[in-house]
Length: 453
Image (cartoon, rainbow, N blue to C red; front, side):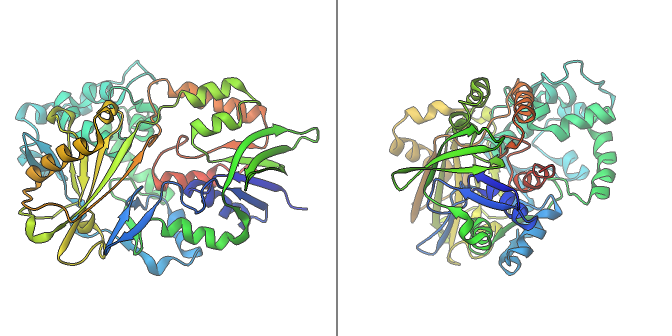
């Protein structure tokens, strides 16, 4: 008789995990609170505009992504970003300046002063830190690359990826590969050269060189296709309430479905629920675990989707979009030029953009009335992009708890979670608060975490 496994959550982590488990021959049931798969991957079509309210793309950092896409019969719907999407802008003094992507463009760029460029060239001669795990990404970058590089490269990058605060994010937990370059190779530049050889041996791509992908009908196509392959193994509208041990060394999952309380007995439980939800589910097994999970901060982020007539935009749309350093004092974090990255995102004579507001950098911004905030953001966006008309479509979603922040001290959470799993054999805590927040990280970790089952 095959081992019974219950997966909690049908986001990309839960669905990928369940898919690999079914392939291995396990008896799998997935419990999902919503009435559709995908978690934060939500794609909708409105008036000819294709809107991704969650992740707008992924990076093909692991061969598992292509393997999964092919096996769920989605290859013919997978698309890659236009070549122009490799060009990214940073706002400085109200001007959009391309982020330099080569030594020549770095020398010529106006983004950094001559002093900052010389400071960066000194990086190979900076010694390792004694701070170990307890460095923020801001401290790490200031020491190795200088303050200007932090302000106009790392600060906006951290906002773009984590919606995070570089003074609080742990370099070890949030950017382990960057941290490893110093720990293993003694520096970033030396490590990037040697690390490239290692990735080649593992058939992995760095996030800088990996191809950006999406799907013709948006990112939700991937969870939808995985779910279709899993068929009747997903129980929708199921709110997981509790996980308890049994006398037979198994686990009992208690959940609510259609107003009734039900339960399942399993040999193993794999939770891909957000940390703040998992804390309630596992609190009776370990109240200290619940404290650790509740301590993981998820800042609020508003995603604002805008569509315009192309004729109203005076600026050339020749890139991925732009990010805004905190020093620029704007009311939003940056904008993706959605219709410039992938085809069929809107009618040919229109242009579509996705803006991000709030995050760990400015959660207090939502104390402002929503209509007033959007009006200010639109004014700033129009000025930056030289837009003369009003948007013909405005859509938004508020993620009250958006992206888990791998802040300083995160190592304690990681360590305790590992202890909990060792003590409670058969329970695995997974999802984007463990091992990375990107789509690629979630798919890679979904396979890693089930190897010992």
